[in-house]
Length: 350
Image 1: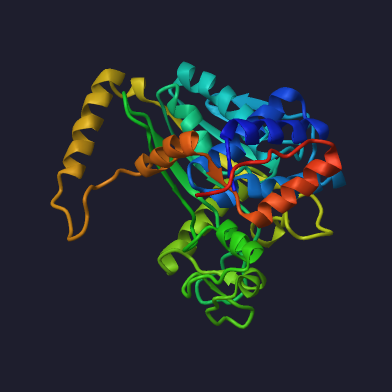
Image 2: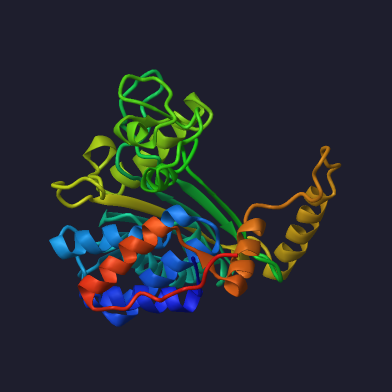
């Protein structure tokens, strides 16, 4: 079924309000989830709403956290009080943007948070103010150490955001694993097999069964290099922030766990401290022109920069609508009935 972004956003916002979130926070969380679907990142979109709702109802995620921010020079330390990762990170980013405009650079370290959706979302927030950013988060165990067969590190994404003058920002958002664990969760929901090379089962053998993969481990991106990247992000987000790390980060999808204590970190750079922003834009435009002018391989019509196709999907789906699988529609319909919020009817996919 196809759904209008505005209808999904309103539904999502009303669900969060019914769960006890203040209206402003509900709007931020809803925007993050729907934007993920608009950009083609369905594993981090509306499919996450039901599990968020369940954990908020259980008290495993705080609906109205008392977020504490402490600044020390160019460092911002944040205690998220077990709030939704989107809310905690959005509040921290907005505070850090003010700091970076005053001091040129800011490092943000967050503890006591939860899954924050797509890292790209926070890169986009910074880029709107002509701030470059590096965003990282840890997550529940998903990747084994190189040579191991049991998950230890999270799939730990890292993202970079670089603003442009008239075009969508350069957004590089990648997991430390071959694939985001959320895609395996989505495949398990829809009953689809996953490609070999994505994950291993509990015995350490590659598997195409998403359920076996979720009991096992996701393979690191680039072998030992992905393992090393996951470790670096774990240190940045878990150790330096004072959050949980590795196997001590609890799983949103595992019943009976206590608060996740996810950690995030952001590094923000005020471009104007390095050069005039208009000069930076000139250089970036020339740089990307040269990238796109590289001779193309057979069958390639255009070379895209990271973030360009994401924006193209956003534009197309803003007009055509967002496809939601029947399994997720059923979940959301039931969630709406439980909370007295009507899920939109949608339109048949052509």
